[in-house]
Image (cartoon, rainbow, N blue to C red; front, top):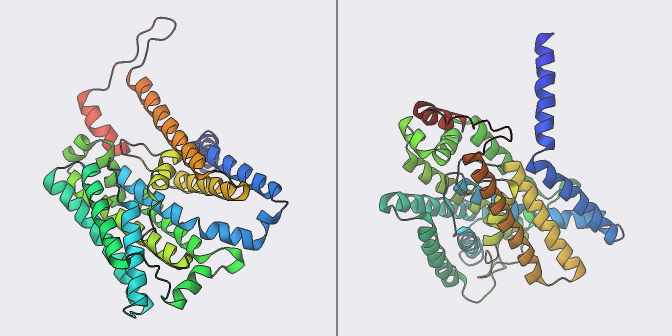
Length: 355
């Protein structure tokens, strides 16, 4: 009886926390936005074809948001998300169309390339101690040149019909590429919250000093984070290649802003030590709704980017203000002094373990 009562109390507490969370706010925005677009389109947005198209092109934003989130959780930035995704997509397309490589081998090659580039990026950051912002900026420039070298000015569309069929497949109007993105999000959630390696990533990002004192190599976690980010980008390139009619040098060119917007709006801190997988997925959903509204109402794309940029900036500023209030508590109105800071030993052990 006691155990059942405890479970009920914990469940109610969890529901209360979720009702006040960023995820709940985003969920309400998604439901309201989807309903609003459906009403504005006289119900056509609720039809199977519209739903299938909407979800089909939601898969890539979800995956690139997760890829950026993994880098952010260790306090890193990955500016090469779009360039690596575009290069990988073009490589897979050219392998199938020009070299007549079987689809499976081309897909495996693309995933390996993206993962290895992420691995090398992490190793270079650790070996040189150069800020990840600079390294990934240089990586982005190199990959943009490599992407142009691979496809030039042409559009490659003669790749495997099986891959295109995979991109169009949608049992019960739910595209397989979208289910792939959700599956990757679920696996990433298990890795981060249940796996020892994922907890080490969060510990290294949340409190590097405590992580090192606990025997966790922060350098290794940076390499792991960029490698995992590269793998997710490779999967995003796969979903993009399967969904698009062809690949060219413009693929990935508009991925950078959404890759940052999704995790930041979803509740991920730029300082590291946190992940928000459900929040990132829901934030990608919101941005997809905004993009759909832009197309439906013929809005200027520059205003859409402006709106997303303002939301991201406001989210970052709000997070900074909350952190400042937590770090600098003021005396209570009755004049009582704030509680003393934790001792050095507690400061060293608690954050790393909590993360």
